[in-house]
Amino acid sequence: MDVLDLSRWQFGITTVYHFLFVPLTIGLSVVVAGLQTAWYRTGRQEYLRLTRFWGRLFLINFAMGVVTGIVQEFQFGMNWSAYSRFVGDVFGAPLAMEGLVAFFLESTFLGLWIFGWDRLPKRVHLATIWLAAIGTTLSAYFILAANSWMQHPVGYRIHDGRAELTDIWAVLTNSTTLATFPHVLFGAFLTAGAFVLGISAWFLLRGRDVDLFRRSARLALVVSLAAGIGVALSGHWQAQIMTRQQPMKMAAAEALWEDETSAGFSLFAVGDVENGRNHVNLQIPYGLSLLSTNTLDGKVEGINDIQARYQALYGPGDYRPVVGLAYWSFRLMIGFGALSALLALAGLWLTRRGRVPAGRWAHRAAIAGIGLPFLANSLGWIFTEMGRQPWTVFGVMRTAAAVSPGADVASVAVTLVGFTLVYAVLAVIEVRLLLKFIRIGPHEPEAEAEAATPALAY
Image: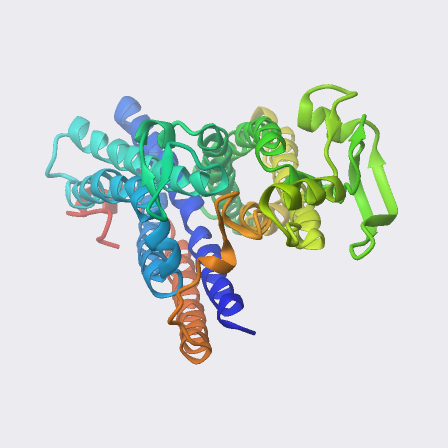
């Protein structure tokens, strides 16, 4: 491998690992805020116990997300300095806003929430967790605005060989951002719903706090199903945006080699990448045209035709991403997300009218289902970033031109191995901490009343 490949591997591993924590943090922040709101409005102790229990797990995940996210910032200077010099004026603006506005908001009010139990008035204390949740959501928006600019650059000009920001509002209201943000947000709620459902099912399986965790499980089922529907609708919108802005990515996602009207949605394909054709392609008739254009007879461009057009527009080169990776990551992303939503739908049916499923299989399925949205999220980002290749900034800067010119194979390889090992250790720590506090479970009401700083005093 050369420096470019190693740098891509390092950034990919860092990004995917970090994004394991991001959606859960976003989703859990709103779940915890909602539970505390229910306690504030009703005064019922079960809502307080659930707020503190899920709040502990939220804090562990938040801390790990902060630690793993910091490394990404440094990689722009270490491995991708050519990229940073070229687009720093544009790309750095939303990232600076994320740090100065969003992260400041979430970290400040999260600290007040942690230490404000029994020190702040209930209404003020409730406001702190909501402001922290808003800060977490804003943080995601600004980061997605930066990433969306790489997918669809707007609001800039090229001057003296560098990209300069001309319209920050255009960057923040990029059509790609407006489509991506709700998709990511619904994916975060789906992740939090599956997490809460799976852990609740673990308690129900063991007969611990059945009434408490049945309530928790029902909440998670509603959140998961609503989020699953939101993911599907926002994903449909995002696919249409992608078809217009990055047709090669959509063509690769469907292994569609030639321009086609009334194109079918591929379920399973075996292709010949070298010769640009499929040997086997099982399809849903008209599905791709409907997904991409909202019409049954819409035209969708194929890989071979786009390749020829891009060569005429950008010069000689291979503008195809890794088609097999784009194709299967797209399918698995949809499949794991849909399976998680179907699990929620089945759970709502099984728990209707106050019922608790008698079979252990339902609880075990919910526990196993924790991983489904995590897989869907990771595969979604792999598809998003790998499907853009060979561009770092689509149509403006190729990935090969973005890598640091002074980097050498040895140094990048050492840091790649080092970061991967450190992240493996952090993963073990995260899992052990979560399992420890899950096994402890929620405190009894009298213990809650005695805790001076309940978010930490466990």
